[in-house]
Image (cartoon, rainbow, N blue to C red):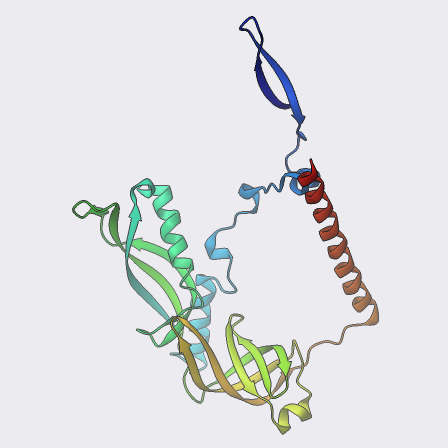
Length: 261
């Protein structure tokens, strides 16, 4: 079956002709490349599953830190939020989806009222019923977002995974999402700190710009050295990169053919 087009005959009757043939299975690679389609329903994930830490994992980590006498680094908070949405989102499913989207965009952001960084979000509770104010083009409601907040303390030590090493600076991530900058010194040279190593860092300061931030600290010691890749693994990685490059070339050729047609 292809796309149909209706043509009017001289006697006033209509004739149907097929103009273009479309693959039956829209999930096929050919369809995705040629029509730039996407199976949105299959690829869509819950906003709670898109981050490095779930809300439940955050609660477990809070208990674990309390047991080690490090309570206060990770805390559970309930953030009140006023939300205004257009009328076409007044349905329950659309409203829930919109509020969840707002909640997920707080992850990784610095919250001045807590002096910390949101690392996970849980359920969103509706505090007040939706209401309309005068002749505004939106309705209003109040919600409470359950969050796990990381509050760094000066002098505390944190594990960090090294993501980048350049002259004079190491860039790592704490808890899989929070960037930390560490200056190179004689000790880092002795330990030969490299990418994917796990290191211990002593926190000293935080730099905040609007809701974005990064930590700064001093290198303490090496916790775990990254495994050295074998030659075979390195060759496989290069082959994968070549395959990706070929796929991109094929996609560009298909797009170019479409433009010519």
